[in-house]
Length: 304
Image (spheres, rainbow, N blue to C red):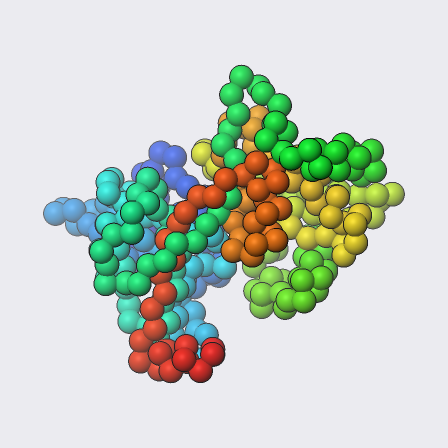
């Protein structure tokens, strides 16, 4: 029996027939860094791991923090059977003490907020279900979007790429356009994730170019059920907007052909949410749990 929870997590993961992307130990290594994540493990009477919940342990402004890993929409229970949410919350009660707890949790089929010692709110992603009978994947798009994409098809070349530096430049331009600072982990985590996805054959970087110049890029990944839009970047002009829409259309078509749900990874920003909905995407709820303890309470009250 493994006494180390991370080793036990690896053992449990190896026994899962169709694990989700965000539960993979290599994903956690890529997003959190080696040694940057832990797990709470539930064992059977023989001491064998039967369920586990991963988390990223870090420090925020010098305070201990347990958070959702970077670049990850939610954490999810590994194994455990039903009901997932209740078992996940039970495992969360066993988390190490920290000043800041900020975790997003995949709800599976449970959408009623359960009674819990943790404050739970809802966040939303936006998803497109896989089509049937080879229907046109653009059927749910609004007319303006379809028209823009048809025009963009004449202007840009869509191609897979290994140009991670160029993609990061496009990402930074997108943040600048929104007058936001890029997350501090952008330049370290994105290359690690891209490398890990490539080595496990479950992700790709796609660029839209004009005369060989990158105009927009998207990074996607997939597991057996879902294709995830992980990140995107574009130039800060109308060219960038139309090229980005073309790349998302391409990613949705590939997801459709693969028979997976396409997950835009959500946004609570109204403008971005409206853009995703123009593709026919519908909201999908997941849990957000945030709790401050000790000095963390003071930190939260002072505006972080």
